[in-house]
Image (tube, rainbow, N blue to C red; front, top):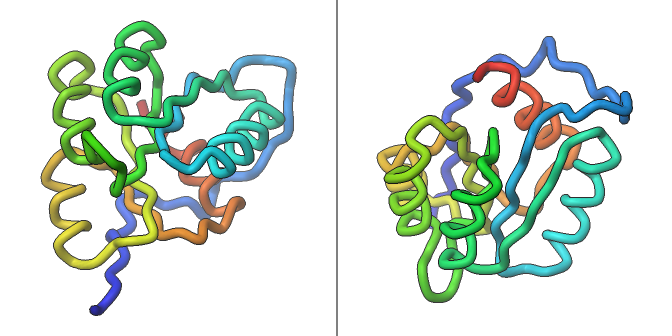
Length: 144
């Protein structure tokens, strides 16, 4: 199976990592069935100054998105129950403008096509380069 990368939709070269400035840089919701990924990425984002909420399933994510009103959602593509695309479709009904990054170990051409067609802003393949991911988060939030 050939692995495809989502095309870069934003130029991240000008984005610089910051560190916590004491202010809220934006609201980020993480959705993944991997609890270690949720803990680690949440901790990194919080240390940079983002307000973060997590959900470990698509169904929980839909409810959380409405109450939390995130600027950006990091969404796992492959989850049991409601998968990433189904989750995004339901979230888009309520939050049509939210930026979304799909993150998954499975990013073949079909997955990338489905992610983009359902409204993803970016696609990232696991294992994730955390610095690249932070740059993507920052660029997408700044572009809102």
